[in-house]
Length: 113
Length: 110
Image 1 (tube, each protein chain N blue to C red):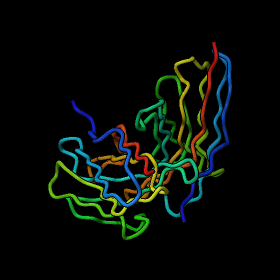
Image 2 (image 1 turned 60 degrees about the vertical axis):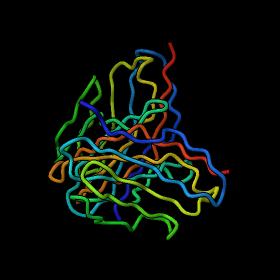
Image 3 (image 1 turned 90 degrees about the vertical axis):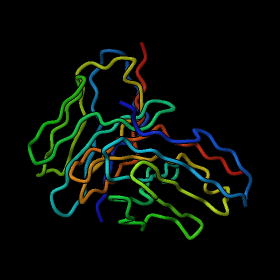
């Protein structure tokens, strides 16, 4: 079975540009999470969705960040405009709402110059 | 708020040595506890979990026991291998959300 799929795996962009990260959850999962991993702050939950509806976005750092889940098999995390401090690895994870184990994708390493 | 504290790394061991990585937590309610492992360039993988006090999670020779009285969930393995070299994250789960520790890097040499 395919795991969580994220694209791109690596993204290098310049400050001020728009960045879109993509995630395809495991089929049958109805809960999706976006995390950010940095050396300074570790793993932080940014936002999560249940049944495509955002439930908690309190971890989204500021208005430059937005996330959508238009259907059960696709989610995006957008940063506009990007800044160097956004450089990090961004992970997507999915699970079933009633389960407690999250399954992580391989991550997108974002570098903002 | 909920939090997880785990020992600083790196932990450097020789093959076949005994491993302990300490993890303590602060939480309201009764969270589930997890250990995740991250290999270089990969996402996190669930290693083991425990859902209530005194439960022991185990997988691939690793074990951890949910100790409510000491609010701990220490990871142990009797004999580590070079292939165990990775970053290990302790986490607690409550109301769908996971709170992670800072991670402990384990380096095992032949």
